[in-house]
Image (cartoon, rainbow, N blue to C red; front, side):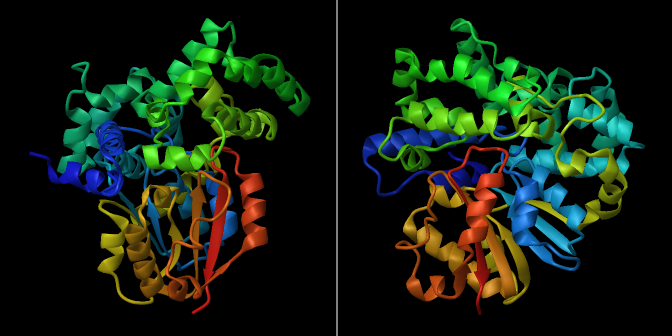
Length: 405
């Protein structure tokens, strides 16, 4: 019998109207998604904060994923942030980060745990300083055994960013590149954007023209490791072969932003964060924000819950900012309509919603009830600018809507 935690993911992922083969793929993805997927979130929090203009006193609602962004939003001084997620592993990770911020004695220990994330002392530090302050469910998750028979907290002694569905996918990508004689880490050795482009064009780009890679990426299951369900795969591919789409997205990641300022490039091409003193890091991991994080960590709550259900229990006109990640790409029209009904009901004057899509255009026109959509103003120019600036480079579009009342 499916658990409640399992059903919450199945309800979000399995398309009721899909053909039997499509539903089978959806269920396979749902099974994969029930474990740790994103050790690090793959949306740029600097872009998020630029678009949302979070101000002191605001109430923010977001999807948690790895909680990197939810924690980073604390630097903007909101009154509260509620981060919800369907995945209990993501919830446990977010709560682990909050407990570490509250109870680790200094930034150096925090850096060792979440930036280096592979130090042998991290496990005893967890046992002594973090575990006693975790809720029972999160503590059980980290202290339970994974499929290898080792405690999950041991991920932080072996490199957490090499774990989970995404970490495994990136590892396989590095292995495939090596088979073709390519070292993806060469991008990180480039000292200029021109050098980065040369490495991409000479070494990385040709991989996507290999017959096996093109065949492999034609199958939706090949991108489960990126957290892309079958429904989103179709949107992402459009009328092109997936290898061409992936090549285009990787080109932006490898060529459009200096690696010295792009921790997403380090995660993709180095399988972890740069450890130098001047390393690019998410705001919540930066030394300059350590005291702010300690002061404000209590403002963030991470909940294992469906976003629409959570909003359904909130007061009317009670929220200021909404971060939806790419979750709407997974939704059918009924789910999309139910979500936006609750967003509109709970939105304060001037509220903003930011989300990403696999394809470039916003998915709301033609799918959302015009009576609901008409109450929101699409910030087209700002959305295009945010899309250009998004350093993760995975998504086709970043979209910003403002409540018109």
